[in-house]
Image (tube, rainbow, N blue to C red; front, side, top):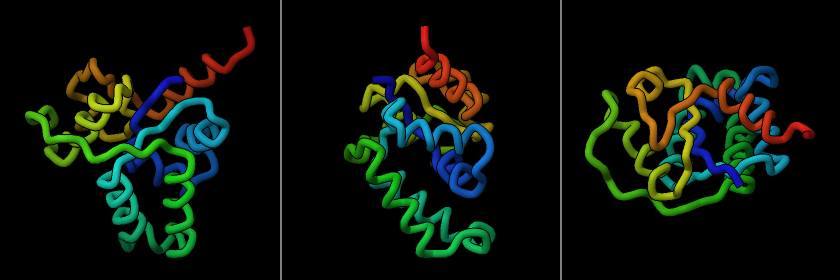
Length: 142
């Protein structure tokens, strides 16, 4: 099964809007179309982002916590990765690269320009729209 790391911005976009590629990816995850890998650090980051005032104004705390529990249910949890040499202009993104490498996930799905702009190949950083098209193509009847 295809494995991927979904950046927290993808989870947040998917829970805030029922339309668009992030929401399609959440549906695909629930349908078992791919395996999303998470670690404690990613889940903590997701909780923190959902608690930010501009996000918390749009989603109730109990809904936010329920969403994190949903992610924990449908994603595959692994331990936090070991630190790596910096690869991103934003050092807080490096753990996603390490997580992908340690878990064997060939993709990091993100809307983050820092990750998309550095030309990662292993793992590849792709947009939610690109990954959704890939998943949908793999699921298409032949």
